[in-house]
Image (cartoon, rainbow, N blue to C red):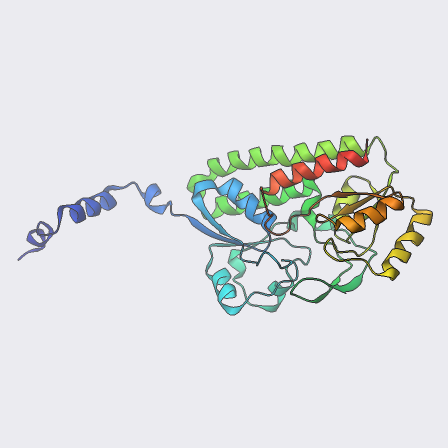
Length: 304
């Protein structure tokens, strides 16, 4: 029996499939989805917005961990190594990356283009929260995406990386990036317009993660080290009272919804509360853009 005889003994569905594959244009054969791994949720959102149906984006950190300090297990590290692209935040974010071997050809430092604009924090502390236990907030700040102009640059790096891996989809990636950029710079402009009306307004933030945000929008910010779901100690209350003597803030900005009892105590001191969620991890509801839009609306209350 020759090869032709064997072919026609195959089921009709199998023959149809083989002929379809043989006569597909090369560009369609090459257009398989890219597998993209990210170290935080903002990069996952950027990659999904830009890549659309051409990417599978995985951000594997657990919801109750801070991705900046999380350490993945061996299986997860192996999955990162097997990905088509590994999107890094840069600025010393995701400490585990420096401790393992990842393929250099797949890694993309999305903040590389603005390394000269990294922010050094004067507030270096060690404290504990969440399953990861103690960690330190180093001198180099890393929540770069809270400056929405820098977030747009990170998104551009994501789009360029996707286009290098899948050049046949470059136009789609560029179009999607421009839409995302418009959204990010819209948020950027709203805060600029809001803040410039009261440039010296004193604010207190509940955690030292707002450095890029304060720098970009020229905000008069001082930081404490409070957790939304923990009651401050007597010492922490005393420190806040001392801070308010020379920094008379009327608003405290929180990473998450604070304990109502703490909110009431702050109100007795003349300090109101609002949430500006950095959304480094998956939000409980909505997505990166909807959470940031809500953040900006919340912030408007402080700048009335």
